[in-house]
Amino acid sequence: MLIDKINEISDAIENHYLAVRHDLHAHPELSYKEFRTSEKVQEELKRLGIPFELSPVKPGVIATIDSGKPGKLLLLRADMDALPIQECSGVPFSSENPGVMHACGHDAHTTNLLAVCEILVRTKDQWNGRVKAVFQPAEENGGGGREMIKAGLMEEKPDACMGMHVGAWTPGVFDIGEGYVSAYSDAAFITVHGKAVHSSKPEHGVDAVLIAASIVVALNTIVSRNLSPMAKSTLNVGTIHGGTAVNIVTDKVEIGAMLRNADPESREIMFQKIEQIARGVAEGMGGSIDFRRHNGYSSVYNDPDMTRFVIDTIQKNREQLYAGIGPIPKEYIRTGDRMQLGAEDFGFYSHEAPSCFIKVGTGGPALNHTPDFKVDDHYIKLMARTMALAAEQFLQ
Image (cartoon, rainbow, N blue to C red):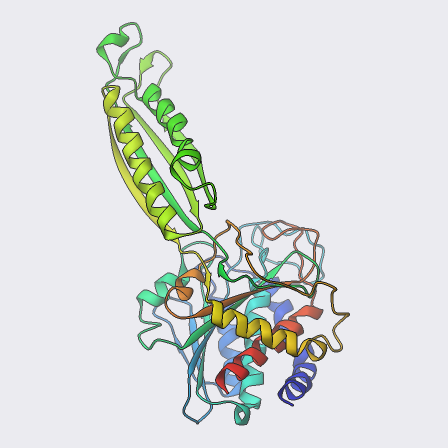
């Protein structure tokens, strides 16, 4: 059986890739600075004899594994960047770079995809078509996925895409939602213009601080009064700057807000209402605004058919997938509506081709993006087995 061959290979290569993971974890790099990580990826691909090219979006790497037989094109993606966090996890391979840490598990993602590449190379007789393995920079800050797509990554459209992400919950528990599973994450910037005067003569000025305060209060009605109660949306005014002295009526205030929406319809309504409300309040109080929209990350959309295929693959092979790793959790796979309002730039891939984003519990209790975050090494093999099996069965 295919899964038995995958298990045999994954057992044989486990120690090598754990060493790779520990090396990557000890040398984390921030977004668009992952040059050492990229060199490590290239070394492993050369060792495996897998051809690759360097992305115009540096330092990304794009490898291609060709079965030599006609078939589909499947894109597999891993992110490589770390976070500006001082590590306090206590693991023996902790970060050697002060103030930088793999606090979201991207070292595990990169390691996993390298292991999957080796499995795919060693089982080329079992599948058809091609696999494009994308090692992407700047998921955390800069939208590396979006930039790689702009640079031509998907000029040849893949038939499907898959990505994987570790999480701080029960080791071995899969979280694979259908439909939207993350949020559009965007920003709106409002500059309020008034007229500055001395505070002893307020009637001659237009108070930008007062206008801004009124706008902030009004913006907080958008989610409750302009969107469906069933919509998954949040609006947060996170920054407000203005004023030069306490005795001056201020002529300029800048407001920054973060929008999170599950679907594109709510996203557009929220942007429209923010501008309408801000402009209406300002003009009604004698001022004006400049409005700037910043499109951030797209939501991750798990294609129902592709997602059901991945879920069925795990369910049919669960005994073998967990063999030698640990007990199968009672609730080993969570499906259905798994929407969360976090952001993830795999969303850009998921809007280009049918996709499935697979989340895997690898331990806690420290959450992702915290100094104590850890990934249980044992479950990287579960990740590699799962992605390799799903990839090969899709390509059969």
